[in-house]
Length: 155
Image 1 (cartoon, one colour):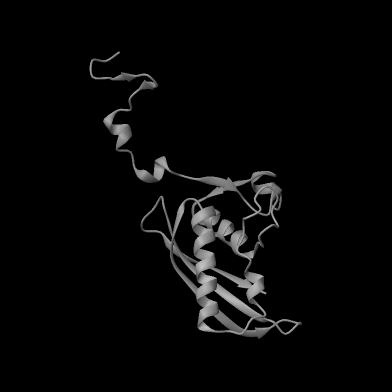
Image 2 (cartoon, helix red, strand yellow):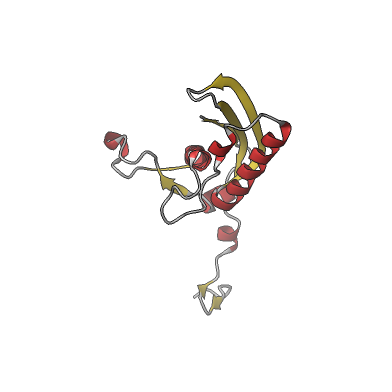
């Protein structure tokens, strides 16, 4: 072993170069592409993705999922459909923002929520309920310069 290498109980300490490696290379997060098995020709049945595509799919799933709908994660989701038949007020939009921000902080890894915008679309569904459009401004944890918007419609 080299003279300047420190051995700890758990192994060899990383070198200065390894400690100073770019943050993006150390913290890259991967996940499955959804829907599973859609494009079998391009990446197999269980295709992986990362970065912007991964976060966009994860946030869209979080916003459109009702609590109790997902197995093994009963608190996953935002329960936003309960807001569709309520009168549209500023308090309603604030409650939706708080719900999304809370769920985002608990279930989305690899991104930081910068802003949540909630808008009425002016369209109504067959039952007469409102449609709500949600736009989230997100920054990837692995790249401070990559900021993007994710849009989802609640119907």
